[in-house]
Image 1 (cartoon, rainbow, N blue to C red):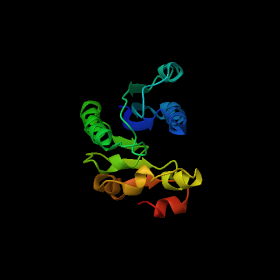
Image 2 (image 1 turned 90 degrees about the vertical axis):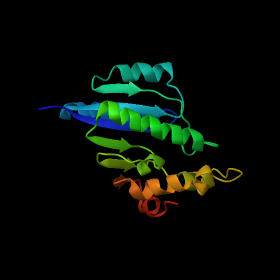
Image 3 (image 1 turned 180 degrees about the vertical axis):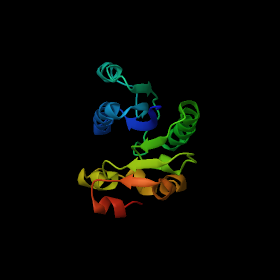
Length: 163
């Protein structure tokens, strides 16, 4: 039987990185190969070293801004095109998104979207000045919430509180 192929996204600047690597390690027991597409910045040497130790992981690195970063929308759009190109190359059985906006892309396989935090409430809790970048999600970003397929998030407020 052929290994299941998963295309997964992860950012390189927070806890999603750790989550992704732990999950990929665990999926090795189930004969799953994971193509990990990173965004948010290039990997640190320690991250690249850690990823290289995982046998069922193929790493695809980028520097595209994440949807919650300042003025991200050009990068988000370019990252979407890049992810669709990766999907053509990798031919995954499942797409596992660890962000929201790319749920709106025209994926040809099932999609699992995992919300790891509520950026809007985090922004408010930090009492940051200005408007949270996600407060004005582009129409494409908003539709990522509704078109993403299956979803998983930390609490019911987050699930019902999508912009």
